[in-house]
Amino acid sequence: MWFLNSIEWTISPVIFSLGPVQLRYYGLLFALGFYLSYYLVQRFYSDANVNPQEVEQLTFYTILGTVIGARLGHVFFYEWEIYSQNLLDIFKIWQGGLASHGGALGILISSYLYSRKYKRNYLWILDRIAIPTALTGALIRMGNLMNSEIYGTPTQLPWGFIFVNNGETLPKHPTQIYEAIAYLISFVILYLIYNRRKAATQNGLLTGWFFILIFSFRFIIEFIKNPQVSKEVDLLINYGQFLSIPFVLTGIALVIYSKKLPQNGL
Image (tube, rainbow, N blue to C red):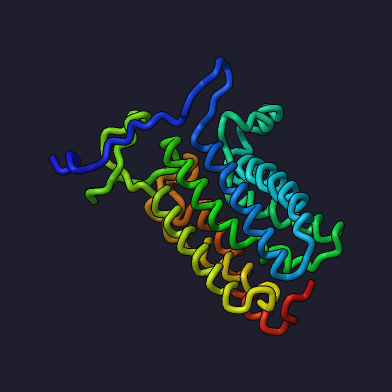
């Protein structure tokens, strides 16, 4: 049968357990993304002759913004009718339920608070976060693969994955890998844009291209992704696509607007 050429995915999401404590691939890859981001942003600060010690606080703000925003994004964008019945379940992050669009909004808010406290240009901060965020996004999507979650519709392509742990019997598009590759490409493009002029890059340019690349890829890949919630089944475009449109439009506006802004405006 045609699906015998597919990939049976039986990897456990847990690396090892010590009593009730588990080390999971998702958490490890999530943490690795922030670890790599910390050192990348330190380099960007040094390029601009800004004290790299500030990156510790920026990392703290970014982690909080990402986790809180991603959690609340999932709650309000996807399943508010469920969580509204028991508000305490919102705090049970270990049960799953994070939304990348909410994470993006959380980063925008936490970065603004950071910029106000440290008297830094808001767009300059966002530009320094944009590059490593694309890399972190790729790692998080690989974590989704290890969790056997957020995969796609049935496919006859030879690289279709049968997610055995979820009881699947037919190959599905490994959309986690598609997105990871897309975000990695975005990371490379953003880094190349930055590397051309480094600290002299116009404020807002990198953030604009980040929004365009990441959310355009997301919009396209969503067409072959399974609905995350049942109420998306009959929609022309799903919630993820709908939420991606404002980010893409904002990105286009930022790229145009950045041409009018000074270089390296701290």
